[in-house]
Each structure stands twice: as structure tokens, then as C-alpha cells.
Image (tube, rainbow, N blue to C red):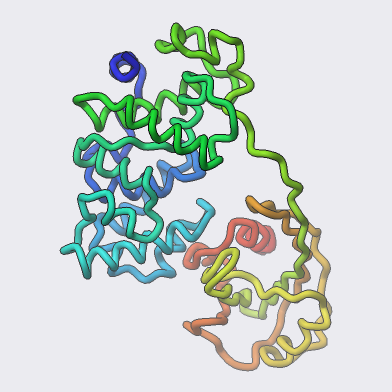
Length: 345
């Protein structure tokens, strides 16, 4: 039986020392599941441990400032996940006695928690029989059952959910959930899967039919567009950089970043507002590209140094001067932080 073979494999080869497994509390499982979306385990572990040092439980997360939460998240990407964590923590303190609820419907109703994440929480933290369907599980099932089509297509995904629920064991639900995630992450991998060592290969259709490299089938290709922006790096004579808060919606929403304009003519009014020596020359820095899931962004930065600020801006909700040697105090998008780090004296 599929689940029995998988659990036997897990007992010997699975991962048993991940930080969110000790203890496997609802809060720790939830935090790890959100961090692991679109992110590898090795990358997540140090972020998870740092996050727990500052927000060890749901109550402390709810009481934290959003800027501090985003700063802890900086570098993990997909920052909506951090904002949803914060929102969910606040909702739970108001509606669920400061705890994550223990029903699927109530969990799915919370920001950032989908069906698979909710099932992972219930399964791993409460040992309840709920099936998950993350990328590792989709890949495993597509190969084992020889399923054609992109796993994200509604009809294919519906079938994968049916199979995932069908395969649930009668016992050890928490271990089984971890087992099937580990199996996809370490054995039935996207490239170079170790099929000869697989405990399921006798019934795996992809292996039997020599279609492992074909499955799961890729999403139909779509050309990714390229957008352009100009970023302004204003450095004052105290070696502080001017940051502005991003809009509430869109890419890097609500985060601190560099002011952006469409061309240099738009920079002058901002300089007039903030500094005395507006005629200070700028330096064109090297253009670089940052890729999001749905488009490429070409960033052209210009830098002004030793500007004399007209007045002090501090703790403002939309604009601020930030010391260049204290960038970790704010949550900056990764490419912006990398750019600023390169300008440190």
C-alpha cells in the first residue's frame, strides 16, 4: 500500500530534526508552512529560527509592529506572506482566543492560508486525517499515476486532490504528511530523481513507462514582459539614504524602498522638497534586472551623494532617512538592499 511503503521509507530516510518538528505546535507548523511556500527548506531554517526569537508565539506576533515583521522576513520574498501572517495573528487574538482554529473551514478563512496549508496544520499539529497538495505531492502523484496535463489546471488539480485524500493512512497522519513532503523534496525530485532507490517504483507508471522526465507536465509557456523603472538613491551628508514606502497594493506592497520615477525630470521636484543643494550631480549606476513570477523589471539607479537635508525626517509613515549601516532595521526588497549594500563606504 502506498502510505505504508512511504511511512516505512520515512522512518529510515525522512527528515526528523527540522526545527518546526520540536515541538510540532500549531504556531510553529503554520509559520514553517508559510515560509516554505516557494522556498527551499535550507533557506527557510535560519529565517524560521530568527523569526521565533523575536515572535515565539502567536500573541507576540500579533503584538509586533508590521514593519518589524516585514524586516524579519526580508530576503524570503513574496512579502504578502509576512503581512498575512501578521493579519492572521491579530484575527486569532480577536476571534479564536489567541490560537489557530482547529477546523479546515476556519483556517482557510484566515489570510494566506489555503486548503493545503490548513490541512498541513491540522495533520502535523493535531494528527488529523487531512490531505495536503503542495508541489512535492503533485509531482509525486503525477508520476506515480502517470497523470498528463499541468498540475495547476483545475481539472488535473481536482483529480490530484481526490487521489491525495484516497491515499491517507488510518494512523500516523502527522508522519505521513511529513513523509510525502520529504519524499518529493529528497527522492522524487524535479530533476535527477533517484528512481532506483524509490520504494514505490514497482507501481509508478512514470518509471514503468520511462516517462519520469516528462511528468509532471509543465505549465503552457507564456512570454514574460519586461518593465522599466528609475530608482533614486539620495544619500545625505550623514550617510543616510532616503526611503519611501511602497503603495499598499502591488509589488513589494507596504515595504520601504527607494523612490521610483519614470525619468530623471521627475527627480528634481523631490530634490527641491528635501534638500538644499539640488544641483548636486548624480551618478548613473549600473542597470540591473530583477525577475518576478509574472514580469522582468529593469532597474536603472541614479545616485546623489552628500546632499544637505532641508529638515529632519524621522518615523514618517511614507518617507524617511535611514542610516546606510542600519538597513536591517527596515524590511527592504532584496534587490534594493543589495544595491544599497554596494554603496556603503
